[in-house]
Length: 128
Image 1 (cartoon, rainbow, N blue to C red):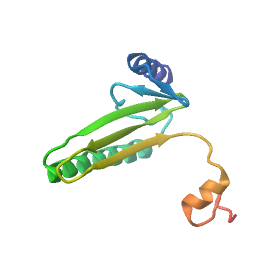
Image 2: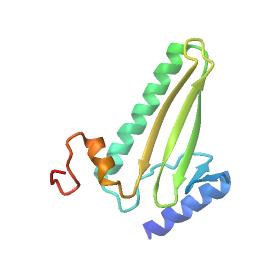
Image 3: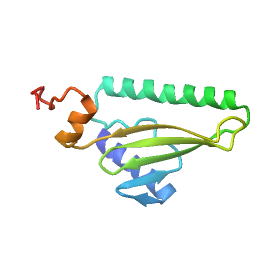
């Protein structure tokens, strides 16, 4: 079904690009979505908002710089997700600028979650 097609698509992307590092594989082109097939419509919509923001931010920075363009690298993770890294270098204004998006899956240690939320709650909403 959808899961098998998603996995097959990821395999084709990896074979085309080849490079692997830490469970992540570079791909020639970012997939249309990095949300797992079991993901929700809200997750897909949020990813679209973030990717559109990346496009807009990169376009505005490149226009302001007036000289350099962004180079894009994309990667996928074996367990799902991936990312798009864009870097502009040696511009008229910016020596280096980066705008990155990541969609990742996995368990986050409670200590890291507490630091990330700033509220000190675990996933069940209990205070730490």
